[in-house]
Length: 208
Image 1 (cartoon, helix red, strand yellow):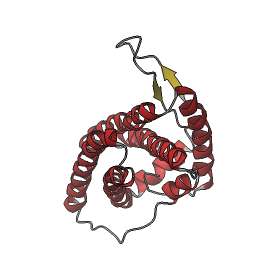
Image 2: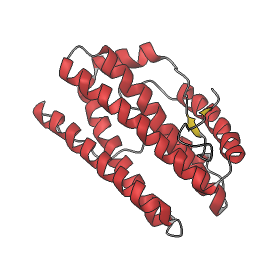
Image 3: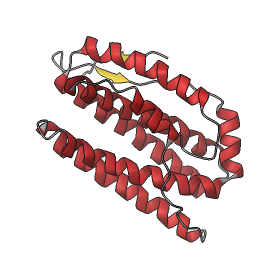
């Protein structure tokens, strides 16, 4: 699906704000798998939150010539780490343990799409991780809607809202460095590619 934009109401000079709409693919099969293997899903979820925190920090380190990244990315890293802590509490409460680190086939496939060239790679990474957050918005929203436990339902509904905020952080940062046409054009390509990646991956009890 194409990226959709809406004009900011703050002022006529404000930059447009894009909202990424990822395609809803095999949602019923995915949520049934998650609910049937929720312990496995929790362990994967914890890994995703930890890696998201590390990714935000990596942006600051990888692009030291972009000082505007520092504050929003470090705030994002702290929030993702807090989410990791919250999921770890759920894991410990259930008597579970983390497993050895595994590569995320979804993120790895997305990163293959990132172009060479410093500016091109920078834009693509911002958009790729924005897309991943948008997918998290959809997936956590499904868990919050379908899980029977009221506490967990509220937890995942709140996480879905947080993921929605996070994807906007990446897009807002892109607008600091690139034109609207450049962002929209590349985003539409990446969103379409992301849908193909999701279709090609096996459905499992995992965030991605």
